[in-house]
Length: 261
Image 1: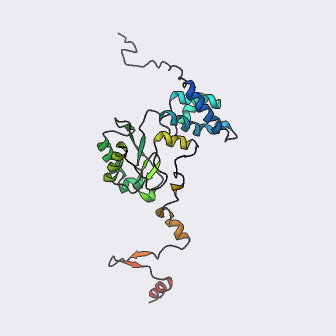
Image 2: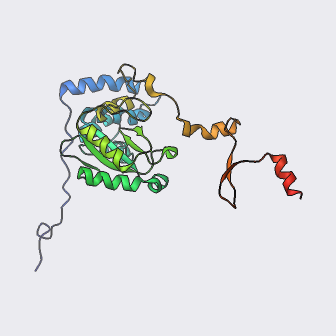
Image 3: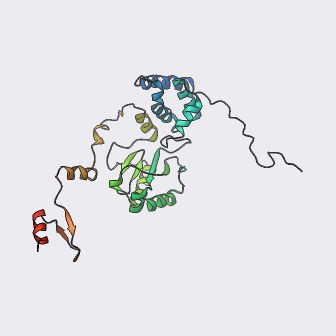
């Protein structure tokens, strides 16, 4: 006896309906912004990445309507736009929270406590990787690298750095985010919502007073190598192999004299 595909639980793979369009007022506003973005590039196709950030700033993730919009503006197929939108992890594919909390679980951060931080947040928030809290405030995700190994373990909120974290500090951090209390990154610009961040990444200025000036420069830990190269660092500290106590490194000529005995 044969069974039908539906009885076997097999999807027939029916194609989706065409992606919906934006309401007229939204589309008009996005088209105005899109023209400004496309004008920055000699080849319009190069504007796809910032355009995806633009449509993400509208609904908090890249919708089918957003991908259709990008395709129509740039004269691409929706398949070409989808290929890019699904390749880069900064583009969300489903509704997410106001704050993307990314925990680095790559080698150095993991060794320094990143895995423990991620596990603590999953338990504290009651969500898994890529999931959002019921209040729509926080989406938790593990990130392979935050490019801040010198401050490990690092957590990012909407791509702003929170350095040298512990399970206790990140619990306070997400609690403050959910309670709408002011949260200040370790370095970089003041925190804003994910939609606002997406618009900034699309290339539009951060219009909050003092936000740009507060960005600052690289932190001390990031500049150690540069100071060493310039000879500006303090004398090296070495551990004596016999008593284990720290000692100032001996001058090169003194080392030579000891070796001649």
